[in-house]
Length: 503
Image (cartoon, rainbow, N blue to C red; front, side, top):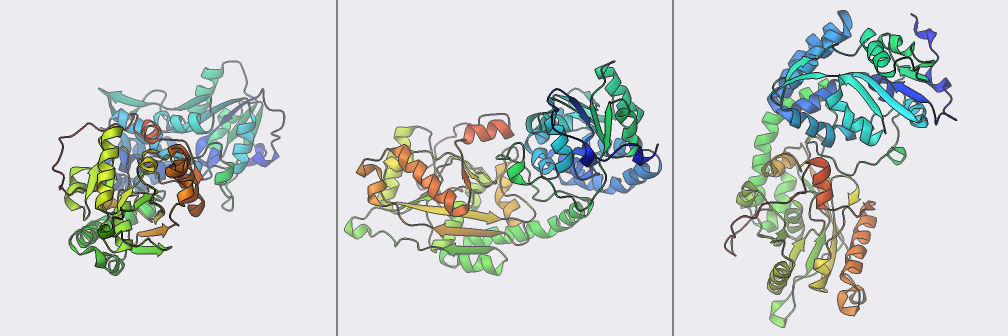
């Protein structure tokens, strides 16, 4: 059957489709990219680690040969086996929910989305494993039904094999569609290759999505749902070339990260800024920080109110000031405690106890706090806790921004002890610290403002500086979305007051 049998998707009318059903393929149709390798690579790395990604990369030439010269089904089965064999089903589901949506949304085809979103009932028919794509398609694209390849499992782990009728390509797609819809014929079928033609022929109208390299993905302001929470260690979508470069960099990047961490931990803070620059870590400082409080004349310390990008925020704040600034934190790993160059104090989650502790620390000098309570890597600010506004009028907002080219320095699902290492493993990570004006006295609680008014004002000021958007989401919302829990950390034995802990 020739490609010209079906008209192109740009000829499909999207008005008046509210009662129609659309059935669409995924790779090359709903998504611009025709290859599913990057998404299998994300599952391999996030769910199985570096070695799993290496094995997948080594197997990809064989998968490509089978895909293009033998059958699509055989090539996809190789990717599924290498990626999933032995992996916990819960880990696959976790990656599908917390990692993949951002990468899928960044590749959404504008014409396909125009047609798909106009229909009242939406179905996706894909060769990808259903477990890998269902969360994204239902939560972000509003799909009512997802028909994908079913993977075989045993005692909670994937075997690497697929269930009958096998990988959904060609006639298997048409079989799955007819089995699901019976004699009811969907109004629209969208596909991008000849193996989609059998299921497209079962629809009243079929439209082909032609490969056009110049097509730009749907812009962020037009996405059906914004990505606020995201949990991948990898910054870029791992194409075969990107995955190869990442694997080649890790043996270089990890020792470099250790060197950078050692410099930040062992050198005096007044020269850490220069040491970071010498080691390829870019630190940019804007604005005018306040002078050091003079305890001799009874001045209390300043409370720096920081937006929260990584656990390293207080360290880069200290590097920008040239002196260590203690910080209060919700929780840290033991490894972070060992390598931290600054003193941090763990919050007890008891409001009265925490308030008394912070007041005492401010009497001793300056202090840093991140009132969001957790990190957010997208251009949004989470809700600010109002506790800090009740404790002092000496409030200085600090807008923190960072840039990473290879690895993210935060995680909700993984081991947080590796967060500093991943950040410093980037070839040239950057931090921008912007000191804003101290909060005027008339806008503080002592002038009659409520603590919530002060917290919301500080959030808006920092968001405006960063061109971010304010939200009412909290730490619990983040962890429920990414990790399936509320982010509560079990209480640990109290440490001695002078114990230096990481941030």
